Image (cartoon, rainbow, N blue to C red; front, top):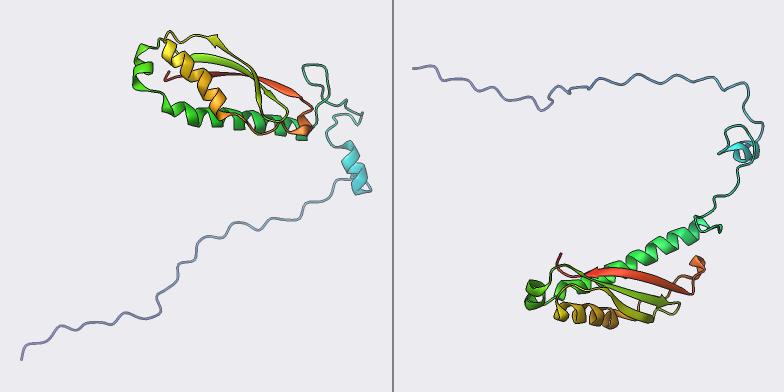
Length: 163
């Protein structure tokens, strides 16, 4: 009889590959001039020589808080995104006649309503210019201006068009 080939069964326990371990960090000695308390470290934080640093002043000469800056940034983004979503509905005929985007200027009042809406720059297409003004009117009211900004009204300029 011919010899039958033998099949070896694989072991259920395969050898496990162990990746190289990174070196274990050693304990660093603490600096000799460490502050005695956590509050001392907090008071010195942000200063180069231990002297007090004046609060940041905005370019308009008034002090702004971090919360006010964040609220202002977030709010202007909300207004811009609301207009950008609506800007996608421009008719094809208005797009073909326009030479550039229409630029609308408007004021958002504290309660979110608009005031003083005008066309700051024409697109070259009367149809697109009307569309741009109507777009802002239709998107109003905008969210109310956050009180932490300290503003009662906010002036915006926004391009409207396909370019």
